[in-house]
Length: 208
Image: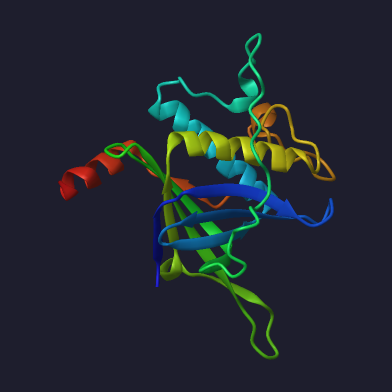
């Protein structure tokens, strides 16, 4: 059964484990429940980029990617806490490996909507492990533009804390040749979907 956390009061990203063996996750909490969503480093980084693009579109360029904005003279760097807070539930209501992420924007409420679809690992005797996408158990949450900015800053710091990131495409630099979208047009397949603004408008009109 799917779960809608609604507007979250807490939203963050971090990594656990030693360098080279880190596991990445999103964590969220609202009055309706809590969730930990595990994902690959590339998924997390691409989510941050997608949120940045969405913010730029809906604010007509007023909000840009954090690392591209020069700090003004006398302006102090904002301290954004990293890591899951101590009061986060030890056993969240939902915890899963992410198979797919879907990002959209609610223009009426001015909220960003994120849907995370779990990947279920199936183990059967005498057979190889296989995965199944569980859309019926998707977790949906919404958050403000301010929360989105804080989240992308966290993601940038979490990803940069491990292996270096390409300065052109902001993707992690792993061992071996780097296929950079900005330099050669190559783009790896990711499991992140963005809804068109037209689709959002049509759904809002239908719900009015």
